[in-house]
Image 1 (tube, rainbow over the protein chains, first blue to last red):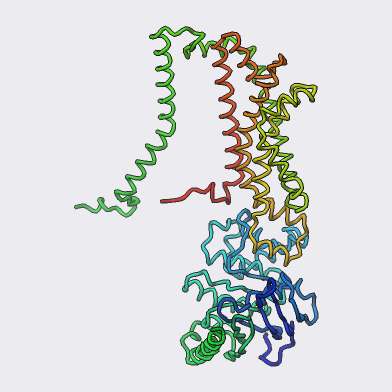
Image 2: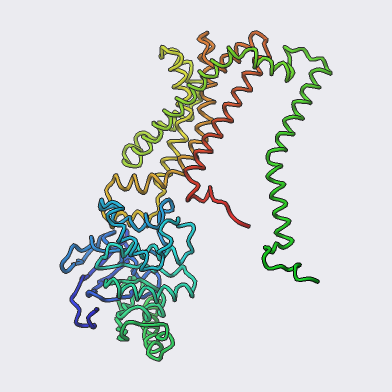
Length: 258
Length: 285
């Protein structure tokens, strides 16, 4: 069970992070953020605000020009999963083989982790598709495989970079609901990059609003509606209020950028 | 009107679908019958042209004479064909080994690529006909000299396609491999190699044809010295003797070899890609 906001132990701290590309493009400027265990944090902002860069820094795919990222306990970056905007599956491998990848790269044979693979596929509702090839799946199903792969090792942290942006709205809503259930089942922390106010309010309990040029954090909002959240939440007054607050914050971000 | 007209058990096929099914069926039959018909008509026209105009056989032999040459000269043609086949297949195998090994070296080390790629290009763009006489001088065995010629022509498409293929792995997948701490070897085996496979197979189809062309050119140039290599040497020799029946028989066998190589490489490509690659997928509608 996730602890209430404010009582969660910190998982990772970004302090005074700055990232410059080339000599003059400042992707991130003085970013400070503490992510706690069990948080569902959304990074919300217009394109060019450095939200994807922040994710890549956390994943250690790129390194900060200045500042530090500190992990509290555990192995840090070795203990995370990632979901990209594209499903990013290997087309030559079956669904089960794709989900096996994180184990395989650690030298674990298929047989020894088959139970975990089956369980992950079952969690995303793809029990019967283990032997299918990615091309046989719809866009939403491919994304489910990608999510299963990110969760199969039960990492402490899952990074998601606009995973549902390319999907139709009906599929997106369904996946939003399922993602919340999955997070409860797996008990991980999620950092979720999005440019959708609605998605960030529905999913997260913390929204970090970012502005562009230079990329920086300008607001932080809390969505204190307790989980589990269901479809009814989308039509509640509470949701409307949070959405308005997040929209205003995003408006600020756009105003400052212009 | 009776209920049987719209019976629920029978599948409903609308006019458009029925028309398409009919067209598909005709296409399937025509795909084989039309080329066969063209072949038969061409042979007939050739035969009539030769017999009606009484063309001497040392200018243009008729199809019957060519056919009987294939049968009568089989004891000469068959060993020649074996030699040319051995030359072509060995050259192709060496081209695959060399091309793939060099492509892997190029993608593993930028320095290796910078140092050697220009020379691979030079080797490719220099006409093999111009290199063959030199090889003949420096290399004792005519077979080895011819093999080198065929290899030079065949290896470049494998090298260049495989190099591009190895570099074409999806960027997000590469990041994923980094996140999970993949080793260099895992990256090559599990990501770069499968990504390169369609490119490699494309190169293989081209290289198969080129290996044969290289072998034929090498036999023309090197076999001329009286070493009598394979089918192309036989063809050249037949032309000196005005034995045009044998010349045409050799030509037909060379061309049959080309068709066989293309068929085999296409089959390999299809078998390896049919499960997942776009190029091998059947689409509806």
